[in-house]
Image (cartoon, one colour):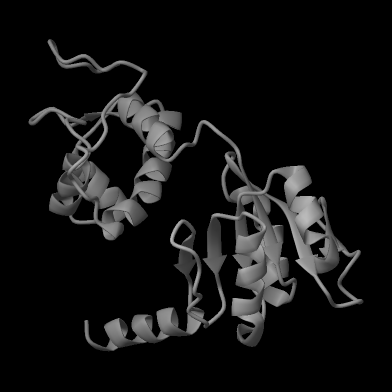
Length: 225
């Protein structure tokens, strides 16, 4: 394993951002990309990687990568790059990849089906454990290893399973209503696939994924590249 003399790369990672430094959201969103790529390098028995190699593999400007990493202290050494195992352990700790996060999905239409089927490719530390709907022809259906349950049982099931995150793929017109119920049940993270911008308590994190907006953005950049 590569290790710069005089620079201690312990397996237990203690590098954290300074308390007064606010990490930009764009940086935080890139962290899972860095983790996945570094994990691939580690699986391939790569010991050391440079910001240039990270840049080429991720298609992210190397200056952006160095700036992102700088928020978390000294993760590498100038002229020598980054120790892969050290980075992997750092990202595991930062992204809490050492614990299992259980996820539920509400709304089992075409998108909901696809997401549940994608379940085992998400991460070995994130798992869709429950699926909910109200349609009689959907409730009771088995998708992979998961049976779709009725929303009447939502609170009981998520408490029993220890669900922490909910994915919403319901019609937009009921998005806020479902979000209210979800947060009241104690859920602190929502991945929102509806076009609605949800109002939630300040201690709840919501990430919006609007496929229409993303597609429009893609077309715009294609035509203006």
